[in-house]
Amino acid sequence: MRGLNRKKIGLLAVAFVLVIGVMEVLALKIGSMDLPLPSEPGHPAVADRPGG
Image 1 (cartoon, rainbow, N blue to C red):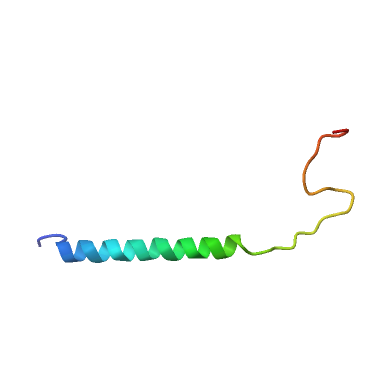
Image 2 (tube, rainbow, N blue to C red; image 1 turned 90 degrees about the vertical axis):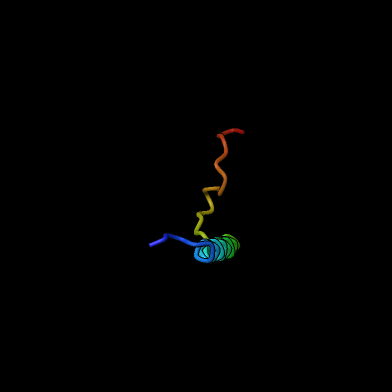
């Protein structure tokens, strides 16, 4: 058994790049979703100091 030859290493590199690319696209799609979060009127979305 000779181990990995250049062709197998090249195919693994291409597959790795494709997997990373798909993961990046999914991350962008998930990050751009607008999720409606419930908020009460008395509680602001950003925590401010009292009296500030």
